[in-house]
Each structure stands twice: as C-alpha cells, then as structure tokens.
Amino acid sequence: MEEYIVSARKYRPTTFDTVVGQQALTTTLKNAVKSGKLAHAYLFCGPRGVGKTTCARIFAKAINCLTPTEEGEACGHCESCQAFNEQRSFNIFELDAASNNSVEHIKTLMEQTRIPPQVGKYKVFIIDEVHMLSTAAFNAFLKTLEEPPAHVIFILATTEKHKILPTILSRCQIYDFERMTVRDTIDHLKSVAAKEGIQYEEEALAVIAEKADGGMRDALSIFDQAVSFCQGNITYQKVIEDLNVLDSEYYFKIIDLAVENKVSEIMVLLNQIIKKGFDGGLLIGGLAKHVRNVLMAKDPQTLPLLEVSDQQRERYQQQAQKCETRFLYDALRLMNQCDINYRQSSNKRLLVELTLIEVAQLTQPDEGAGNGRKPRRLKSLFKQLIQQSQPKKAAPQVAAAEGGESSGTSESRGTRGSSSSSDSSSVRRGIAPKKAVGFSWNKLREKNQVKSKMQIIPGSLSPNDPNSIIKDEELDFSQQDLEFQWMMMCNRMPQRLSGIATRMKNMNPVIKDFPQVEVAVDNQLAYDQIMEIKGSILSTLRIYLHNTKITMDVRVTEQKEKVRILTRSEQFKMMEEKYPAVAKLRDILDLELA
Image (cartoon, rainbow, N blue to C red; front, side, top):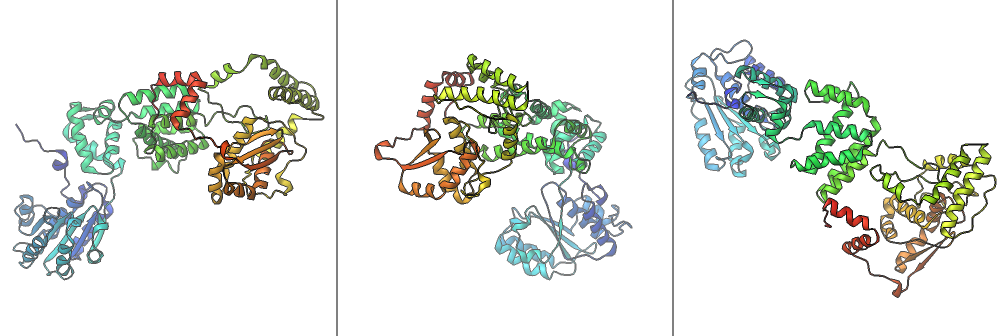
C-alpha cells in the first residue's frame, strides 16, 4: 500500500511561482537572487500557514543553486539542489527556536557559522519561531547577526513580530506575509482536488476557506478531513455537517423574515438552531457577518469586499435588493450591542431572543401616531394579546373619534375627535373633561412632527427659553405617561449629569393634584441636585406631556416613608401574583431566574 502523505506536505510549493497569495514578496526575493544583492539577515513574519518557512526554504535553495534560471528560480538539477531535495545539504540548516531557545544552542549555532560552505556560495541558517528565543539568547545572537561572516545568511521566521527585540528588527530586512484570501484558497483547493480526482461543490470549498481563516495549511488540513468524511465527493451539506458549521441558509431566512416582521417564525428558527447544539453567541456573530455582507452587496464598489463563492455573492445581491440600508445599519448596531453584552448576561438565550425581536421590528411602522407623543412600537408577536386585553366598551368611542376625523371639515373633525378621546381619558382618571374649543388634530400632528425632531435634555434649554414651551397646550396625561417620560428623560441626560440621572431613575414622580407633580427624594443631597436642574426638568415634562400648566414639588421623605428595596426574586414573585400569564409563560419556556 502506498504511503499516505497529507495534502499540506504533498502539495507544498517548491518554487516561487507555486507559492499562493504572496506574489509581491516572491517577486522581490527572485529579483534579489537574479541581481545577487542579498542581505545578511531576513525576517519573515505573518500569521500561521501562509508560507513563511516554505519561502525561506525556496529562497535558501535558490541562493545556493549553481545554475539559477533567468527568473531567479533554482534549477533543481545541480548538486546543491539535489542535496537539498534529498535533505543531505550541509549548507542549509534549520533550527526550531521553540525547543532550542537557550544560550548554549545559539553558541553552538555560532560555532557552525565559522566553517565556510563546501558546495555553493552561502551557508543559510533558517530559524523558525524566532520569537521563542530567550532574552539572553537574543543578546548572544546580536553580535553575529550584526556582522556575520560573508558566507552566512540568516532567515528568521515568526508569527509574533512584536515579541522580537527592536535591536534584532533593525538588523533584518522585514517581509510581512499576508493572510490568504478566500478566493485564492478556493482556487488552490480546486487545483488540489483536480490532481487528486476529487469531485466538489464550490460552496463547500468556500466553507473550508472561511474556516481556515487565511491559513493555507489549515485549509489543506480541513480539505483532507472533508475528503475522508465525504468519500471523494465534497458537498456543501456534508462539509457543514463534518465541520459543525451553521448553515448560511438560516441567516438568509432570518433576514427575510425580519424584513417581513415575522417574529414568531424567527423564534421557531432560533429554537431549531439551539437544538442543533449551536450557541446563541455564535448565531449573533454569524448573523452580524451576514448582514455586513448584505450591506456590502448593495453597492457595486464594495461588492469585491465579499470573500465568498460566486453563487453566494449572487444570493447576497438578491437579498440586498430587498433590504433598506437603514434596516441593515440598525440591525448591525443591535447585534453589535448584543455581542458586547453576551458574556455578561445571565440569561443568554433571552438576550438573543430580544435582539432578534428588535431586529424584526425595525421595518415595522410606528402605530398610534398623532396621540400627543411618539409611541413605543408594538411588538407584532404580542400585538394580538394586547388588543384582546383592551376593554370592548372602549371600541365605540375610538370608532366615533375615527369617524369624526374622517368626515366634515378639519375644524369639526378636530373638535369631535378631541372631545371623545379627552372625555374617555378624563373619566378613567376621575377628572372632569375639558371642552376643547377650536381644536384641530391636524394642528396637533404638525406640532408633534416638529417636537419629535427635538431632543429636550435637562440642562440643554433654559427654563425661560420661549422655544422650550409650547403655549396654550393643556392635554391630559396619566400616571403611566408621567413615569414613561420621566424615564426617557433620564436616559437622554448628558454624561455630566449621569450621577443624578441614575438617582432619578429610582425616583417615582406622582400626580398629586392634576397637573401638579410631586417627587420624593431620599436625602438632602439628592434634593439639592434636583433643585439645580428643576427648571430644565419641568420644561422637558411640559413639552413631552403636552401640558404647560405642569408644576413640580420636590420634598425629602421622612424616615418612616422609606421602604425596603425588593430583591429580583421578590419582584418577580410579585409580578407572578399580579399577572398569572407571566408564570404561565415561564413554565412554557422553562425559564429560570438567574
């Protein structure tokens, strides 16, 4: 039986022309051989598996060739080349610095430099993983490296150039090897497969090239593994199964569903992916890379940046036509934030689910526009549940308001719609409804469009600034509206007010005598800080709650008023008692409180 040789060794380049992906470097080395202008020390650096040691061997062989070609290649037939091919050359020495890194090893090497070559012109010393030498060994090597004998050439190779002493770097010609591109790797794998008589799918080779991460040796090793698994017919499905790679089809499906706001189907896909043993963080990272590729495919100028197969490039272009650029930007931002928070999250699956839900809502239009403030987007997954929970008796009032708005003049529509909505909200809070005179919903919408572009941040507007208050606006607001706008205000506060913003998030503003608002603080320090920005806080609340009559009282709570802060477990228990559906959801999804 013929001895088996792995592809990385069997198809290792033997000439400069067969080196893949390093054309600039190999051209420079060939020109140096042709001209005879050789330095006494070279440093080859770059990631693993890109050809550093291979190029060092080819260069050493070409240097000592007795009859080099006109292109600067070794002839392969002279005595020096034959001795190198048969591994019996006394002019070329290889030293692994990882296991020979002491001063004694370097001194032994220095002794060998004194003996001139018997055949050829130079003695070439190739030191691999040179960064593994100890500091003492580097220092012992310095003098010889600076002024070596005329017949000695050093070729150093390393994957970590930053670990080498600057005094060594300054004495070498430095060649930085690049990572292999996916295209170059695919082409090389195609040639190897053709020589071995192996059938393949280009998408399968693209998966191998991406898995190799720029290293040709890694790509050939994975190629051998795939050949053993696929029995001579490398297909895409078999390769992703063998390498445990998530099928890119999932990424295309998730983005297609997100554009159509199909949250439920995305959750089903996520469950399938997790059941196959893939981590949620891996999914987010792969999906972010996929969205990035879709974004690059939207512009012909950035299309060459896609390191994928030709079939995949066409699919990216097709999906790019369906997706808006703004959607892709926002999706990348959300997934990047999820990736940052993933390791710190105690419930990683929930974090991934929330991120995918947010991505699926990016193209969903805002609902309820024109109600006095920008609404929170309704989640389509729970939209039906929210509509079912609303009391049915409120439907005629809403219908009446909508009917009034769709008929008659704009003035009459505004009056009828306003009285209906304000009466119903006032009755729910026990407040006597106010009669709206000359009110127009169209005018209110125009005001909302202007204010939605404003970012009212405490401290950014003066309390006396006339632009910070919209005159003659007295809309009703609920306790829930107040708490929501209070929290949004805290989130918008600048960095210089981050301390008081954190304290304000724990405060609970209360409507005492509408529209009077009361805020209770724990201590005098918090009271003083609130009073310093009270005017800006009041201006913000008046604008976003659409009521210029709002007043705010701040007081320090008495000791007996302070309550114990509940733990997360206690808060969740209270939530279960108040909302039984939460407990049911926990049981269905088999969730645990971290």
